[in-house]
Amino acid sequence: MVPSFPQPASAAAATRPIPGSYGPPLLGPLRDRLDYFWFQGPDDFFRRRAADHKSTVFRANIPPTFPFFLGVDPRVVAVVDAAAFTALFDPALVDKRDVLIGPYVPSLAFTRGTRVGVYLDTQDPDHARTKAFSIDLLRRAARNWAAELRAAVDDMLAAVEEDLNRAPDPAAASASYLIPLQKCIFRFLCKALVGADPAADGLVDRFGVYILDVWLALQLVPTQKVGVIPQPLEELLLHSFPLPSFVVKPGYDLLYRFVEKHGAAAVSIAEKEHGISKEEAIDNILFVLGFNAFGGFSVFLPFLVMEVGKPGRDDLRRRLREEVRRVLGGGDGGEAGFAAVREMALVRSTVYEVLRMQPPVPLQFGRARRDFVLRSHGGAAYEVGKGELLCGYQPLAMRDPAVFDRPEEFVPERFLGDDGEALLQYMYWSNGPETGEPSPGNKQCAAKEVVVATACMLVAELFRRYDDFECDGTSFTKLDKRELTPS
Image 1 (tube, rainbow, N blue to C red):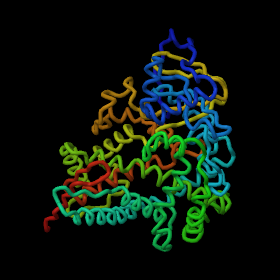
Image 2: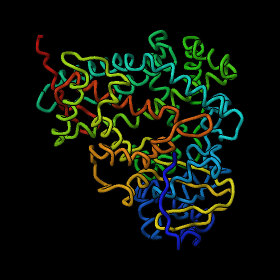
Image 3: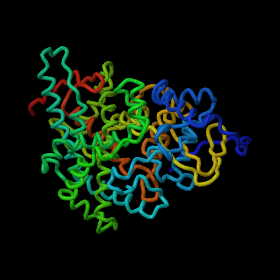
Image 4: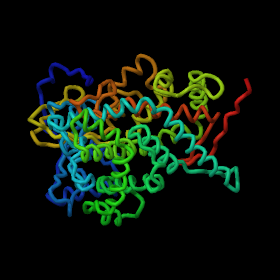
């Protein structure tokens, strides 16, 4: 259910023009692009414009833009508050076709010509089939999800421990968990979601993670601030033209054949139970696996480990450890499965707080199906014209001071108790409120519940294995192994 916000009766019918300007052709979009990527960065880009216009709804240009993105209209209506943001979840108001990452659509060649489900609108006849198939895949995967995750996490942590133990100076030891975590995510997703073990194909097992990283980067880099090469080279080389799909085609074809051969059971479900052709089924499976699941987890889970492991958060880690071990029991404990993590209230609240502060997909888009009035806090109302593209920036909407106390602070207990649960309706990270239900008729993430549960399972596995740990960015600097007392 989409949350509602009270509107003063005196202001209910009053509308105002949307503030802001797109600037002169070419120069306006270029100026905003340079602000977004170079001079300000995405967060300041939206914060400064909201402050300048004294409005949480305003007009701006969103990259990619000039010079070689032909047919891309960068003009958007930006939305950065929790109330107006809800319009993006209403299929009667917004069309979601081809707006997954904004006005720019990567070439269909990245998916062998298949327009996968996430680029379809709810009114497209193929959307319901592909969404129902994704939900079905996740439902079937739940049987082995926790076990496969634990096995993959054990391998990941063994590799990280080995790196730490090799450090010449134990006092300054550090071991990155980024690549080991990505390998963990890839292997467990292949086995749990697709029913295909990467170990069955040596090339996939060795290079699958890197293929997906390149495949994702080529699609997303034109819309992302990267920061790995200095400006203006980043603007000239990464943000000025669409990146080609042929670079990663051999790798994608390798993964396609891997799913075709080793994930045949999942493909058969798509064909026989959902009426999807074999080719479209494999492309949709790879997109769910590589873009939605692997890509999303690769962004979110490192932030989760980093936030929990920050120096100075010893008390939080102590409380999380005690809760995990109380729920799982003594010794090595029971399975940290879906039922178990539902009982870990503080773990879940911490996961939600990281999702609030660092949503894996910061921007959500929707194109107005018709003229309508967009309502914000306090009766503010704006006229949106048919065809205009709404751009919601989640990191600000989920730090809306009208909804969240101390919105800029990390408060792991924020979602505990009745008052905390009431805030879940304003958690929008899944392309819908946390209190909503994914269905073939909406665009909410099919894995909404699974993402939260998986993050909780990862935290539980860390505290099953360690009494404490600390991180410096995406590296472990301390791993205090749990000492099991003989029963």
